[in-house]
Length: 88
Image 1 (tube, rainbow, N blue to C red):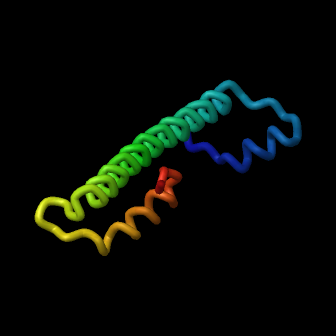
Image 2: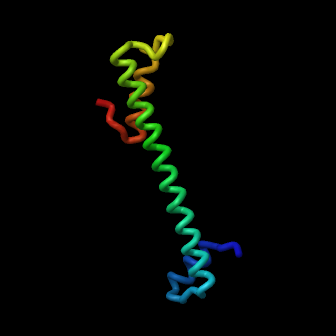
Image 3: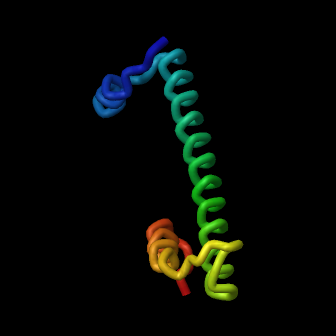
């Protein structure tokens, strides 16, 4: 069954009780949103760690592997700042 969140919102604002089926569907949708949020947070944390590692490597070595990377450091720091990481 497809759920129309705007219709459920209207029902709840009017003080109308939801059916058990509507409540179940709403709960499952919320659980799906929570799972998606957790997955996105994990991806963001991984990106943050990878960016921090790249910044540390560049600051320490001046390069990553054989690639000169001084030009990319400001972009990595801005990306890290944008996702809420430490940019020292």
